[in-house]
Each structure stands twice: as C-alpha cells, then as structure tokens.
Image (tube, rainbow, N blue to C red; front, top):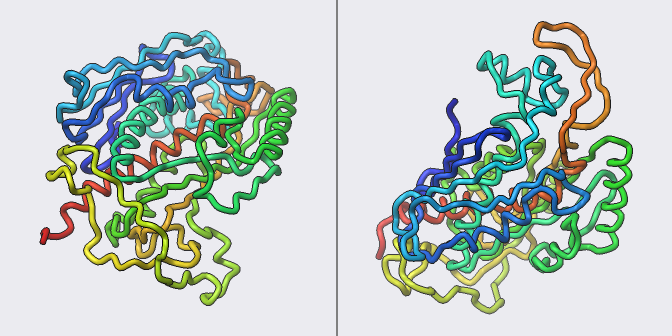
Length: 390
C-alpha cells in the first residue's frame, strides 16, 4: 500500500489499523532544538479522542503516546520523531457477522476491488482512528508555527440544517470553540446543533455538517504556483481525512453567482500594527535566532479590503487569513438495518454493531487543524529554497 506519507520536507508517515495493537507515527524533518514532550501533544489529542461526550463514539482510548525517538533531554534532536499509540479498547467481535458483507458508505468493496483482501474490523486502515497520528504530528507543527506568529483554529459552522454565521473568523477564540461539546463558537446555535445530534442518535442515525478552518498570521509568499499551489495542498490534505466530501476556500462556490467587480478584493494601505513575532530561539528553521523562517521578497504595507480569495492568490499566500471549509458526511456506520450485498454479490441485510459517532464534527475540528498546520509548516520550510538570500 502506497500513500502513507504526507509532506515534502516536514514529512509524516502513519501505520496501523483500528483493531490492531496500535498506531505508529513517524515525523521526519522536524528541526532540532524544539522543546517537546508528551504534554505538548495531549491537548489536541484530548480534543480528538473518543468518549469525550454523548456526541461522540464511546470507545475508550487514552490516546497517550510514547515518544520512542527524536527527542533528547526535552528537545528535538533533528532525527525522526517516533510516536507509538497503543490500542486498548477494541471489540473486534462486534464485526464478526459482517465480515463478508459490504457496509454502505464504507471502503469495504473498494478495498476488495483494489487489494482482494481487507481488514473488516472497524474499517481497518480506513478507520478514523488513524487520525490520532495526524493530530499528534499537527501538534508539533502548530508549535513550530507559533514561533512564526501563525495560529490555526477550526470550529463547526453547520450541523444538518442548523447554521452558525461567523462574521469575522479571525475573532473566534479557542475558548469560545471549546465552550461547548459541538465546538461551535455561537452558543445558541451550538445548543440547537447538540439537540439535533441527540435526536438523530436516538433515531439510530447520523448527521453531517461543515467545519471552517482559519490560519492567521500566514505571511505572503507561501506556495508553489503550479502543481503545488498552497490551495491545492490544503485541499489534498483536508480531502485525505475520513468523511470529507467537499472543500472550498474564501468565498468558495458562492463566486459562481458573482461578477468580477464583486469578487475582486481591492488593495489598500495596511494601517494595522505589525504582528511580526519575536524569535524565541534558534532552530534549524532559522539559522539566525533573529530571523524567521520566511520573509517575503517584496512586502509593502498593503492588504486587501476584503478576503473573498481566502488568503491565497495564484496558489500563493497573500498575507490575509487563510480560510477554508470542508463538508463532512454523516457517519456511515449507523445502528439500523440496511440493504447490501455479500462479497459474492448476494443481496442481504446488514446491521452494523460497534461504537460510532452520531456526528463526526466535534472530533473532526482538531483533525482539520492538524492538516492545515502540516501543510503550512511544510511550505514554510520549502519557501527557504525559492530564492538566494540578500
């Protein structure tokens, strides 16, 4: 199986299946000198872990990693960071009676079509449990991005037909997001979303929605203008996550109803105070402790008056906030009988057992943040090769 590694310079490789012994995560390309411990990874892992509320699956995994390599005396040493997550609450017996049946909405048939073999226990390699590795790697990327004054935050804007309008994505805080189990920063809408999910769960069904992701402090000039456009890599990263069926950035599909005069973001002088971060110390990312990873070749104090372009033009960051949205489908595993076929094509019925999320949105937020962070840190590193200094 190919395709288990993400990134070019900051590379993340994952291995493992939902009902196996555990998961392995290798982070290659992290610079030496970054203070790092398990405690740095736990906050985001706790936001992703199952069993955190009635809105999520009740599988009980601690998701506390073991750091096997890459950290010495509390700091990264420049070698690959190895993380091990042990599975402890598998119930593989829940899947024995469906091993020869194809679950609607899952990758059972497509795995058989490609490999002629599949691990039917909880989805095997396709399980959302694999994202425990991505979230851990994303936490490392976030820590590096914070040194550059870049912040990544996600939140839920829609569950079913309940929508929350966010006037200024850059004003949303982590405290607002974490104030409710659905991770919607608008309290009254969050309450309605929770009520809807609870009703869907009692009806033995599931529901989807939309997650918005924002990166603030991204400097202009990141992204390669042809095949490795920043928007293309963000799209690939987010679409690689389980249950994502749609991706848009900026004004997204709304531009189909606009004219050029409506869609264009005009340039104006930037009178905001400078937000350049103070360098907290030298790493391999910054050969001089007073330098950031990336300083634009040409950066007059200008900005766009609006941000319909979502912080990216020509596949390159503009300096405005990077704003993306993803559509999350309803969880495919639902506790009600459905029509399907067996591996030999015989019609039958299937009832999926096990423990599953009635709505993936609450746990998806840190997953989306992680993938945004991984793309940004990779492009920050790549930006150093785009020109000679001086």
